[in-house]
Length: 222
Image 1 (tube, helix red, strand yellow):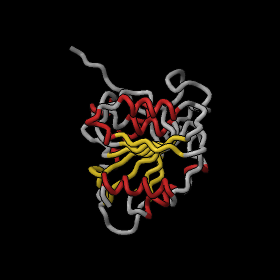
Image 2 (tube, rainbow, N blue to C red):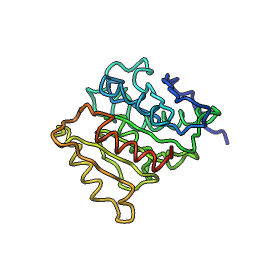
Image 3 (spheres, rainbow, N blue to C red):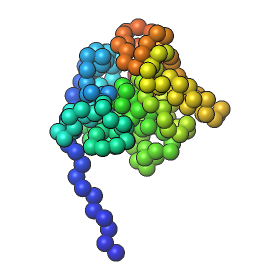
């Protein structure tokens, strides 16, 4: 019986920044919001490298030449990038990085903002496509994800949302946490940023940065 043949996917660009030394280093894959990379995230790669990890900024939005603006439409309709696309982007990037001797993809975390945050949480969700892959992320960090998915996980996630998020992300994430089974509560940590809206600029060396660093150290080591 003939089988369906897969088609080549999109070729994505990325920026890889490494700490000093031989490694192999744990790696943090980073994914942008629907607008692509903005000033809100610009300082994070350097901070992640300072913590001793390889930082990889994946250009999921701007690498796709047919995408002009990804924020004006629901993320599940039309010719736009969705959080599921980012899940596959992450798995593809993980596969590519596994061939590099100075990177330990057995110690990989995923981190994202907005759309990228949704893709990050989805990448460690037990009911999504992530469960089909041999390689898996050991942890996820997400800023303002949509939290509209099943509350069961294959790896821990640390989620930050603004208290005054106008897209109701705070309520959705609180509901997701509420639905999480007691034996899985430790796999979904929700932090609410007081007074913040949907897009908030976070000092990566402050309160949030300290928690992200501790979370990464706990789950992918130093």
